[in-house]
Length: 388
Length: 85
Image (cartoon, rainbow over all chains, first blue to last red):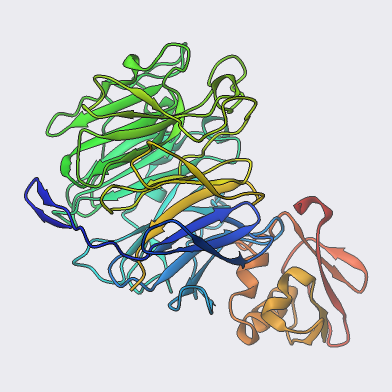
């Protein structure tokens, strides 16, 4: 794919892909053929580790990072430069600064999110942690340092809230986004704690929460109460972002700072609560979501036990189900925020992993789904990449 | 002194029992980290606190503070707590 301003020229050349699956009990790699019809399983890697994210560096096609911990041991990052045939542990994984004597300090429970840096900054990576922290590596993930000062900034610490303002598995910093046009233009999101933007390489940040709703009874003016589940920037138009929030689906068209709730057009029986959101790699009007039941006690299952992706082809004006091939009932799983993604082939392939350990794929932009793996542990993250 | 390594950490040591030196538990853990890079951070967080699901015993008695003094003949046992999943 070649990007010229906002116009994109699609590549018709299909490449072998690898689907990277992070689970509650280890990591798996699924190597595909050129047609994306057969997938060869490679795993488990780090059996028994809680793997929150597994990402291949698109700049070199060979550096693979894993964010891992176990039930007993502290968090770390593993690296491979041979697609998982061998691994080395980071020398200095993400960790907060040591607190001054007598003051309580924070400790990273797990690294939750990994984002490769800008194309012009080889070997740079960003990491988001639980509790919320932002970190950067400049050596391909070997050593990590706190990034930008937000980890210890009093205002940001206030916005990060308490454990009650986070997910059941702890509050998280996620959706670290680098503007492909400008390495100094960054976004991140926090559950809870809102969406934030920097235009000066992280020296200063500003929240962008206008237009976003919060849980009934809470004050939307309080940044802590904002819970963006997943934010994505459109490669086909980097001035457009989409967000799956605790309270709906939104679109943001810069330079506006006001999110527009586009999930109101979803079928009422389905609603617009969910975790993942996937943007089309070329078409900024096309977005997929995977709704879940956010009613009553928040079951976090597919609404009515009928899992379905939904797609809009017009920026959120209308939505339709994209569920062919998926179970038609009695399927009580859902898809977590990092567990749905797309490739850049033509037509675009979609991939998602379920809380029940199934890996699903579509070779035609969600028109038909196939289960390509089952009986895995609970899937936390799915990424797809083209190895060198 | 001898240090018994629990199974989750044997990917670092390759052995069930290793030797380490130090006059405190913290010094022993530092020596372990010198021999087996990365092992300390899996047990001790960045605030120098023991991780909640790792337990340390010195001569059979649980240690709660990494500054605990040790003698050369003491035996350190590192255990994965039953709470960790």
